[in-house]
Amino acid sequence: MRFLNNIVRFPGCGVFDPQASYLIFQKSTRTLIGLILCSQVRPDVGHITQVCLLPEYRSSGLGEALLAATTKNLRARNFRAISLTVTEANARAIALYKRIGFTTNRVFDAFVWEG
Image (cartoon, rainbow, N blue to C red; front, side, top):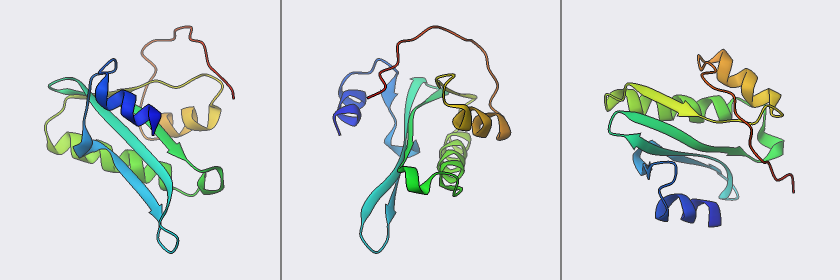
């Protein structure tokens, strides 16, 4: 919740775009199991700021479904580009992003907190 609050209130990665952001709930328990958050960095460029799934739901196709919903929404709204960032240590996410058509434009150093 703190991360979402920061994205909405402090547009460091663009302006939060609720239309292209989605939540997934486990139906029977109404437990939040995944989300994708998106922002607009320009009127025609979206940025995926966060994709999260509970560990037990990874490799189930839900991450790909979240990405598909966001990209479909942005395309329908005539966005010309979508960006995201991912740490090199997250090989599974990188493989997913490449499989669905994302390419590497830039590699840069960043500090990652592994809590």
